[in-house]
Amino acid sequence: MIIAADSSALVSALEGLRDSSMTLLRTALREDRLRVSPVVITELTSNPRITGGARRLVSVLPRFTFHEGYWERAGLLRAMLLPLKVRAFIPDVLIAQSCIDHDVPLITYDRDFRHFERAGLRLL
Image (cartoon, rainbow, N blue to C red; front, side, top):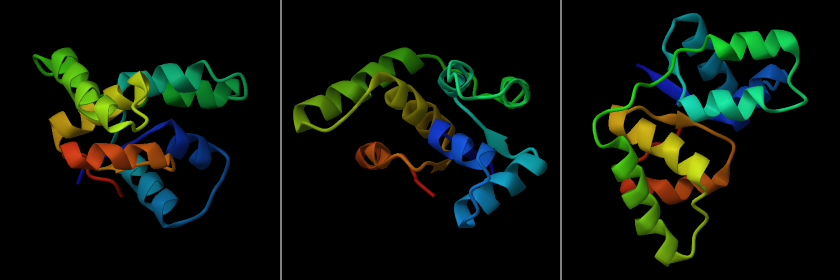
């Protein structure tokens, strides 16, 4: 099964966190079953705390491709959530939409992603 990870999960993995989610993430990485949204690459490589070696690792992670209409669906997803007064930051919207489009569950430590479950995002 292909899985996705957001920045919070990848930073936790790079910092050596050990829990069931990190075991799943590391296994998926070893077995080439981990994917990330391109915005995750941007978030991580712009993090000043990430070392050069970690930056190189992040830069070669397999990425989701965008399906036709991705940007419009992402906008509509955010438009659906904003009236509910929930946090829907654009990077999170883009990550969630990538996972929804590819029907891939997401590993995250960011509780804001729970709001996207109503739109079909599956969280691990």
